[in-house]
View 1 (cartoon, one colour):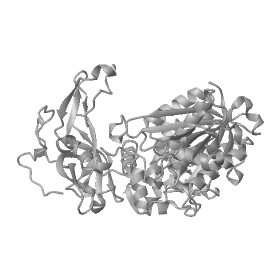
View 2: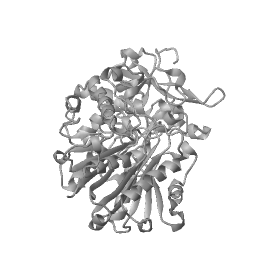
View 3: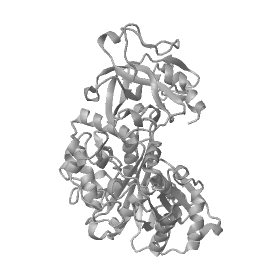
View 4: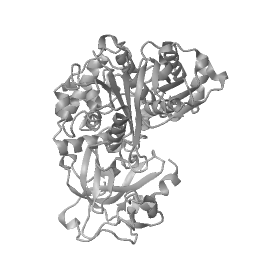
Length: 163
Length: 389
């Protein structure tokens, strides 16, 4: 994969930058230029606003992957999951910092900035989001829906070894 | 729009065909179909070829004119069109060929499907398989195609209480069916215990829940129904040809335990043919991953949502069941050369509906359904084929 092909998506992959339809308020990730939900589809063109997801969500479904995707060979077995975010959109990503046998549907998780994969020993390293289990203290009461982009930083009080 | 019939059908063996090239298998299937149709070559007016990934698999694009050329038709300047829709490429090509004849633009066309998967290492074959998923938002984050189907399986188990043993029964039946199909990639029987104990790929799916990487090609000749009897004793009518699409990524679906694309394509197909699921005796359905067959049986209308596991395990879709599913062995055991699959499904239905399926013949088959899926269901294609005499 060329560097530009990955680099151009960094605002989404690093900061969970999505979009929100200013007509029906539905949130999308990755951002969309037109709203699939609005009855008058074309009315939403030009009315999609940037919105950053807070990264909190819960496991909607999961699998323990043994036969890896390209670039993930060194990580097997790893947990692949669908995460339903608190803002609504569903994301595909890994669940890390957990015993795979402990992962359950409904488990609260939050996004973290991690190394996804590397293209060989001398190749480009891809970064982006993965998810880790959340404790009650991780789930701050109001973190959702900021319109100001900010890095997906570790919130205060949370310290974890990296994946 | 006029009625369209299948006049001829052909298919190569599916499997690891190391001694045969892409063009060889493509031509073999096409010429078989042509001979089967008792049609003069000069009557052919076009080729529609289903293929998913020739560029990455054999470094060759423009494969439709390539096959036309080596089929000895290159100097006739016919139109040749390649059609791509992931694993549903072959079924999509059939849809394109159907429209071409139904519209009256052409009278006789060949629809082919071909894929050569074993000219690359298995690991590359798997990566190409994964390219039917959304690369930027699924694969980059660690998803594989079997991994995504595993997410569907886990959620189906969670919502409907579907048991692991129930979808493990799908490959067992597929292999049993394929034992009677000389073109099948795998003709050995397997047990439920073997499926459950196989090397995990993406839990809950193991190696024997997943269709193999195969080489193979299949082809049919289509023509207008009104003249079909001149070219075959038993024309098989295409009573419906429907395509429906959905979001590219699984995570954007309304409900991941249903393929809306399949449900909508099936509903439109039954409407077009003025038939219901109860009228179908035989079906070739997508079972690239075992859970896919269960989800398909529900979405096609053969069984209520959530009830497929118990029904399948009880033999309702086996030999002697109310709908005989995947008498060819399905993608799992007949094989999975992506672009060829959707056409091969129809070749199997044609043989069954004509009564030519030899020792795997399903008695009294009059209406058959073919169902193919690209990726996790961004594309679904449903065809209904009917014997008319």
